Image 1 (cartoon, one colour):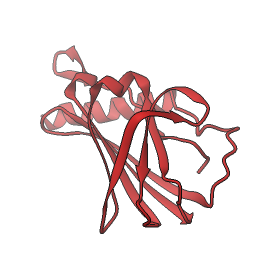
Image 2 (cartoon, one colour):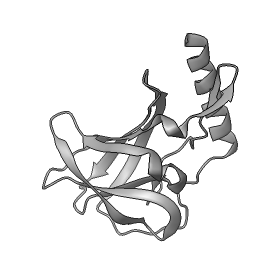
Image 3 (tube, one colour):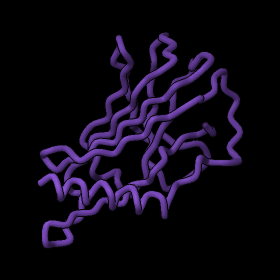
Length: 153
């Protein structure tokens, strides 16, 4: 089982380097914050479900919520989206959110309800249907190495 998981993770990151999603260069947004760093983790759980965890470090004040997305091809596999920091769980709106002026993404808006976190995490939990069984104990998921954001990091 360990060998299969290691193979899957190696394959994910190899494919992700070959087919990265850009940081949406050219998008100009008027915001009162900047994104300093994003820690992007893609893991396969024991159930076979996939979790994509993005921890975002910001400076300034996030006042109008925060938009983050994943490629639209994965949207049918979303089981749940959770946003939180060290002391709060935030509301996530997933109804018809546009990721800037870009198409091809499923985006969610995190509502901080007056809080101004300097670091928060958004986790997309995806069904095991996004994992492709190649036979002989080999599995693959082609997920981008970078999160889909509306501004550069």
